[in-house]
Image 1 (cartoon, rainbow, N blue to C red):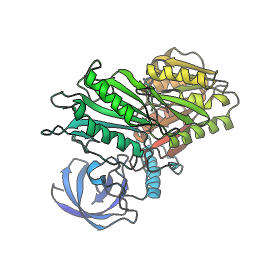
Image 2 (image 1 turned 120 degrees about the horizontal axis):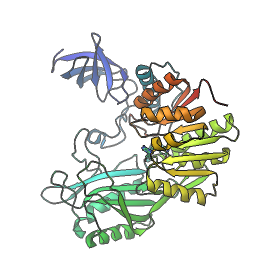
Image 3 (image 1 turned 90 degrees about the horizontal axis):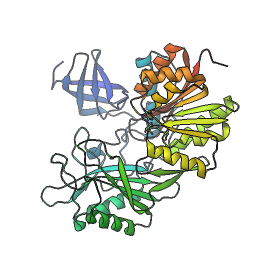
Length: 454
Ligand SMILES: C[S@@+](CC[C@H](N)C(=O)[O-])C[C@H]1O[C@@H](n2cnc3c(N)ncnc32)[C@H](O)[C@@H]1O
């Protein structure tokens, strides 16, 4: 096989990173923006030892699951990779991708449940973070997502997966920044003021927290005036904060934030508890789908345990812990982000939850020094999953059940392999659609110790 050669083939399946797979004489070729059932002419773009990459040069017969993407920016933006596939089939694909990823990485043959759909499939994304730059000559602000595999901003005026008010706030920033002398960030030269705009929108109240991430270490008058104009313009903007990030880094938020106008958080409701979410706190971007996950975990614990002691690890604002507290004897949570931990303590108090013990610490440090054993351990790590040491310790601290919540099927599969080797069995894996129209999948795995400790 050589670069630029063309072949006709059918797309058989999709990888966990969203690329279609075709086989040409048994050789695997990855082709982006394709759907199982597509018969296409593929132009080879790169040949590796065990696989090749190609792109569509012609769709001969489209898959019956192809639909017209509802976003006008679909081709330019690339954030919703699966938008050209009908929603029911996206859910089916996510189930199949999970099954295939778990089997190929862990060797485990587990039947994966049907994906639970998101209650909202448009306007669901309630945290947006747009990089900001400006045009070379006129200095006009550009705000949007990076084009795939580049740092070139697609200037997004309308995004149907986020609440409409976010478009209006961004448009105001685009139009008014110049008047206040606020410049967009130049990543190469590391100059300019505004690096990112982060907006958190509440599904409960519709209110918004706007965070201006600036290339500075302290407040300046132009920024203060600009922030005030945003706050005054929108009734539903209830807070404008600044986050200082002057470092040469791809990390969006710096460590220091300050509220300039209004309140420094929005409120969100999960099951029957109200949470505060600040500029720097982790919170699921799709709260309604997240609520389904919290209910699923709470119901599982209520149905299978009486007065359990539960460890909520990688806890964020202790969202699992606080949601499940009334079916537990005690919940202990551990989270490394200080702001999240402080908000968790405040949230527990405001919701009159008294049986939650909250620790601000690295999870592996906490595990290593902890002596108590837990009926249930909830692990909800970031995309990179858990370290081997953390899994060893979680196994040691677990009496019976580990509930592993994962946003990355590949690291989930790796970690399940480690846990099953140590003496666990995976009893179920339930996918949830948290990130509709993208290839991302959230899964909840229930893992039981083969020899529970009584
Ligand atoms: C996927 S989020 C889950 C948060 C929470 N369970 C929720 O659903 O809202 C992962 C969390 O783990 C935290 N985290 C990452 N590495 C950590 C570590 N080594 N120790 C403790 N917490 C960590 C992050 O700050 C983040 O809040």
